Length: 118
Image (cartoon, rainbow, N blue to C red; front, side):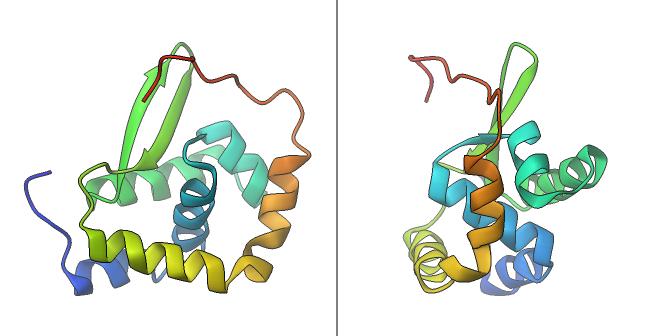
């Protein structure tokens, strides 16, 4: 990661409800694929993919392809202050994220992660 996110860039990226939920769901699960995020948020795949691309462009997410699936995780080079802020936000806002987390839990046929990944 060449450029570390500034506070302004981080908060602009998270100012959208969908992007904030995506980041917190991914943080909570460690890694999620597009289909899981689409199910959890009840949004279309193109909308979720557009927001994920914005988060990836901002340097907040990293992705990897495994067969037909594309998985997203927090960028491994995120500064400690960003990770701490996201963890605090997740812990303080689990009720706000709860409907999406419940939809994710009840999702059938979730893709399997490769044992050797990440």
